[in-house]
View: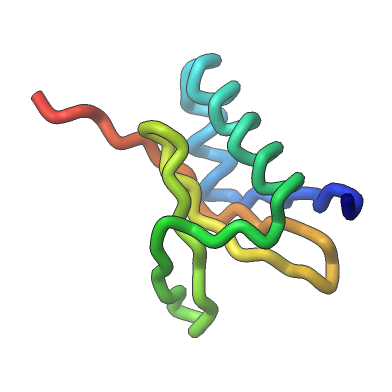
Length: 88
């Protein structure tokens, strides 16, 4: 098994996490840990960034993590996190 990748979190994702509950922060930490141990995991879907980069979007329950992998730096670059609330 290859060594884990590190993760880097954007300012937008950091602001989301700082404003979240402990439960959501723990869920995000688990998601980041999963991605750092499995850096070749594809997202559930992809979206384009304004820079032209393809971003992976992965669902972890009601948490959505948008990221891209920098294999040269061995980093998961987390661009955004958000919570999807259940339908009412």
